Length: 485
Ligand code: ATP
Ligand code: MG
Ligand code: MG
Ligand code: MG
Image (spheres, rainbow, N blue to C red):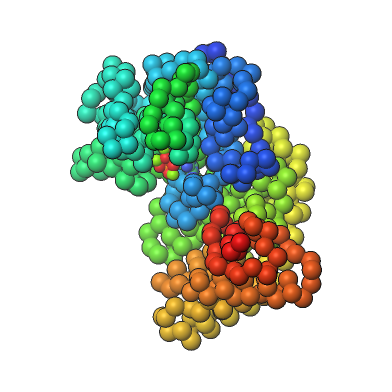
């Protein structure tokens, strides 16, 4: 089944259950001070759960473009190394705003997976919240009892607060979740070890596909819970993971969501993607290809939604992702000129029906990426050589922060890129010294001119006359300077 049809069937199914189908919200958030990018389906409905406003329908479903590269959900380090976490991915979701609750949500999830998509029940496991006395939250008996009518009891696992309890913040709506996991290992592998032991254990073929959150409590300021006046359902299913299962492949990258991009990368670079790498060199090539196929989607969709790469905030996150991809191409696929922009053609052809913005903005997206690539490639080689020299000089010791800062300042290396390259060599740099060098430079440029750049967010509007007392990391490269009042 093609990914297009898989997506459509999800939407059709929930439409048939009385849901209003709505478009994805933009991937970039402009008016939420707590979040730069949409990182889950529920973000666009957050206010409804807080009791502000009413949705167009008490039942809604959609596919949401998500980006998990910052803040609470940051999967960037995993991407390309594993085969099931992406920077940008689609989250299929259905919602009940004070309408149906656990029984319908679980039954429909099960019906969709096993009857519409015809997934074999014997590859599924489900989890239910086990309860946590210290935190005053009960075992989700209700969900457990519903699941018992659908699936063998030894396929129901109890999960802890980290995996199976959702909270919006320290206060506010919260509730247990019930997740669905697939075990797509071979029969031989399954005979060796039970899938039960591998649920939530980072196994590439035993993966979580669908999270069903039941918002039933409100956490009060004193930490106690009360029942919400109206109870809600918020679900999220990873589209690419679902495609992996339904297309009978072992990795998200082997689905038709990614294979056209991978083929295009192979065509341009001459590199070969191997479904199962048999040596280190092949695995390195694979990782580079996966990273590029993944990152071009994140960058292209962000630009199409209006977020241009820049030196500050969300724009810098996008620039960092792109530079990461460029360096993977340069070092591991040996491409010394701009090429990633060309992939947008393939992406637009493939995703344009479901997300028209990627087609209508194609030229802009291509131009911006090409320009970014060209400009970073001007300094990348020299920067890498400098880093090579430093690595030799430091002889396995920690690299001085000032060197990492030079790479950032003169060669445009985001610090996480420097960290990544060093990590590949089992090394690191001194981050505190980097931050110090950064601060000193900012102070110098502030003294030199009254013009202030805005890639540093000042919490207390310090004018530089207050004593500087330290940094707080916000997200990504954005730092909050702390001044003593
Ligand atoms: P995981 O444990 O695999 O990191 P999660 O528990 O963080 O996933 P949720 O926040 O529950 O994920 O999101 C709902 C669904 O979205 C997950 O069940 C999964 O299918 C999908 N998903 C989450 N993160 C990613 C990602 N980085 N790339 C692709 N799909 C993802
Ligand atoms: Mg996660
Ligand atoms: Mg999880
Ligand atoms: Mg989850």
